Length: 531
Ligand SMILES: Nc1nc2c(c(=O)[nH]1)N[C@H]1C(S)=C(S)[C@@H](COP(=O)(O)O)O[C@H]1N2
Ligand SMILES: [Mo]
Image 1: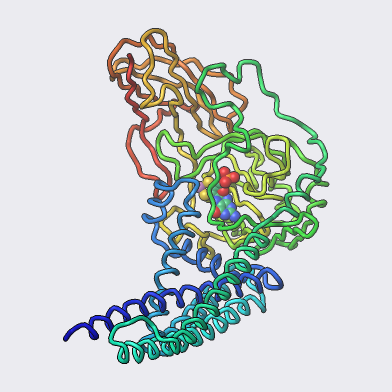
Image 2: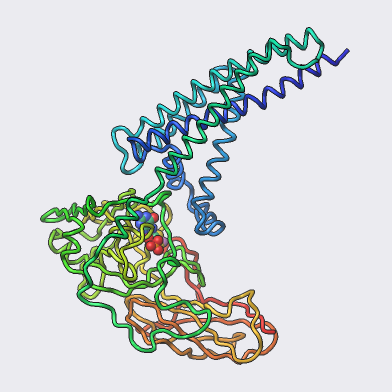
């Protein structure tokens, strides 16, 4: 008769499920212990964040572009969810291994501990104690998986005995003891891990103290402010505002958590090929006198027609003044700027020392201290260069060096070491997929050619003649301009194409280029439906 064997098989399957759960609970205890210790005394020792940051640094470029294109601003959340799923699956497998081949499950958790130590100690800002949370977490997780594995095997033995005796009936009273123990210990561990882990992560992630310091920060008024001429801002529904509100300003960076920096302890060091290495405090910097600058920032990842571009009024100090005090040595041609999170950018020295170019150390954005996610307390802003080679947020060091000797974060990852912003124009309205009613319809948008200025914007409807658009009055060459044409829209579908001409008389290139290695190009052409 086959019945007892079938019953046994079914029982084994059930234990696979319990063992997978035991693995997941053990991994949760690993992470919870590590998060708690990281919160208490080893900031930056969080294995989940360190491994996440490590993954961000090593994933191939096309994958990163896919992530940004698919998840946009939520790319980091998507990464954490993906990482969480991977941890879930791996820990379930570890649990099953511990059931069938002890102590392989514990070994797997040990390996996870080694990997997270490796990720933690190689992060920028790692300290002598950063490894402790990962090691302690791995020990706790491995101990638990061994204990739960033993209890589970005891339960299985009991239940097999019982089923031999009673031919497939449920667990005997004897097996109830092992089962209850397993469920009790596992349940307590699971609940504890959830409470401690989530509590520590939330507490660790709150930057409320720095947010409060930022709110209480009183910056001196700038010595000069930007004059916005009459006619600089057009009143057209759907066009980008001249100045992008901070809350709407695009954000691009590799930081999984926003660095929390107290301006009191912030220091900027100027090192490398200089006569006099410098160290500046926040007060030193602000004490040099702030001025207001209007600059349009652009990301190299901005596709034609894309929204990774924005304009703000920045308060800051010219970088040339700081560099002059340090005295760059002959032969230097690059400044490698470094963020507290280890991110680096390579900016041509000439772009930072040139008297005609307002490269600044910025401390305020649109009249308030830099928002935390935009680089509080100090970032760079350099007109005319894509953000990844110039706009280092959470700035902490300027190293005067050469392109031959030093390499920035994105250089070995498929992007050019030097990257001036390509002139571009964008249609803000009408938008594809938003049909408009026939009649007078404004076609409007923005165009930018930082350091040179926009001379003209031209629009073509259905590949007809180029019409010259009306321009807003320019604030300056580093700020985008708004443009519009009045269109007598007739029912049907129409193509609208835009191109710009800069103040040097050059026409925006029609040639399509992808964002890597040094920025997209081509004319935006959209399909508009008129009803
Ligand atoms: N520390 C740090 N600074 C950084 C980056 C980064 O990843 N880390 N990204 C750069 C890139 S690619 C761009 S486009 C700008 C974006 O600045 P924003 O997020 O304030 O718009 O910041 C630059 N500064
Ligand atoms: Mo960027």
